[in-house]
Length: 363
Ligand code: BGC
Ligand code: ZN
Image (cartoon, rainbow, N blue to C red; front, side, top):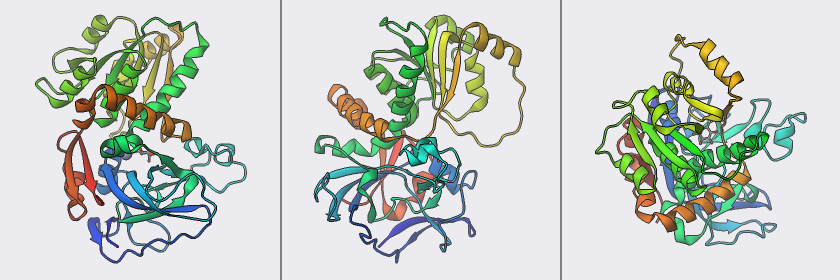
């Protein structure tokens, strides 16, 4: 089989032509024919060696790809929830082996407490940028045919859905009420725009604050789903704060820590700041910690980091994406701006263009 891989020792990206076809090795396993795989900032960081781990044991390369939709082509004798022809989205993370890791032992490896989890296409396990994959049915999430063409967006949407599940839980700490809450989304890349859709779908008043000036295709998508758009080149953080009013939730999707901590200053009373980006190591900067800490305390604020996603977020992402697709079909389709064959997988990894680039493997 063909597979798209990163070779850390050679520092190169290459298509491997003799990657062995995976076999069903357990009665609860399923085999998928890979349809589409999305490329994201994590892949770019791995390929530029800013983030990454040694390849799987015994291999000098890692097959990349963690944002995948595929079609089931074979199921083990003990699989009852899937049949050949079904579409499925595989989860990314696999549990660590430590008996004392309660999250992993409870099926919540997205909260793994030891750090010894594995992630397909990222950490010590081959990913999905290949023709066929095998995994336990337990890690598969069914997805309706109606959203097949955009289903590759489910995994990046899980980041926002996990954030939202936690946000609604955390805000139970106060009388949150059912007035319309105000959210600011930082960044208008795929994670930011999918977060915008999730927040709009949950009834929030949303303002997207991002670098690009209009006219801009990401700004158009934000506005098409009923959000406001403000360029950080036109308005300062203080102007943003004044314009929005009391900001209840800030959803960060840039990975730029200086920008995030600058905007933290304008988080509202009782507000929640959700960080999702993984910045590179750019060294220390100076920020006004007194002001940040005073606000966190005196305004009852909460700062939350979130990574990866559990079954609940995957399920919400599937139903969410179907709802967005029904409400805003052009905006959802407009998120996918580039399609590449497997042979050219390195192009969108080496150079980010448009919004979301995907690799088309099967039809
Ligand atoms: C993926 C997550 C993963 C994280 C850190 C993200 O791009 O969507 O599933 O946990 O990277 O490796
Ligand atoms: Zn990703």
